[in-house]
Length: 460
Picture: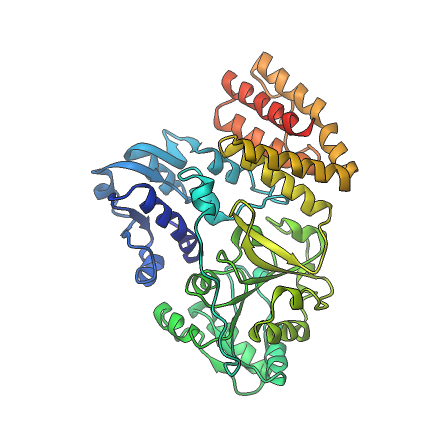
């Protein structure tokens, strides 16, 4: 029960499940209008409509994984018989989330500033080991011969805040043509009007495929493109899955660490402003994060990407107000965005620490993961001592909250997470979600105390 992009991001998990449970058929319950066009490109699984609930509930399962946020999905997941269930469940009006990593994911709502785990990885980490995820090699996108100069432009997204304006696209077409590149417009039925407006503003000939291609046709046409420029949207994930090199214009309330192109070798451009470092909803009246995306700069970058320039050359480009990332893998094999041309700041150092800490705490408490988390803490202390001190400074307040709850069974302050300092919100947010998920039981408070003790075990 997800949109196309979310469904495509579940494909790696489906592959890992097939390896983890050899010989077991894998059923995917989804919406036909999203999965039908993807069946030829998806792993070899059985798709069925979510409306077939009677048939689905007649079977017993080894594993049920719910990745949807919809109540119908949580209810169905609770009603079926399974040895193990992961994700949201809704039974007798009571909501629960099974799986520490799915609980972590839920704690990111309005709290994802320091998150460095991609949705595709989070989908699977309660099911398979981090080493299984990290040991999987995905091919990098193809680089076409230099004579291929067609550049795909996907115009729309699920929200106007997440894609450029028609005026931007029209100006970009002119800039690309001026550099000897041939832009081609793409979009589904929802982008037809947008395509018409872009062509009107450009006032010149340009090939427009908006609303004219089925997904299988899009993947065929994509084989002839040197680059696909796209907001964060379903077709971006389809392009990345099929090996088409992407430049993701990451704007609006999206977070490329969570939903950027998953395979290594793609590129993400994001405003370098502070609020863009973890955006769930935008409270501003104007979309300031759109401003640095100037068509001339994007065209210049496009020409270098289409030519196959490597990270070293790209790192020397001047892109004021923007950060350029290349998708890749971390030392542990997880999704990673390598920032080109800038040194790690406090935000990136804090993000690395929280990534390593949760990887150790939720990933089986392996000794190597603990060593990595301690090294990230040491690096943070050495380079940004004020940030490290601020994290430790909230420990007494958090300890009081947890000790009060352990003694009384009640929350000392309902704003336990909301009012905590921003730097430590990954921990307080997860702890608060854990308490809520377990009805503030005695064991939940003990587990909360253990979280704090685990934090101190790394940081002191």
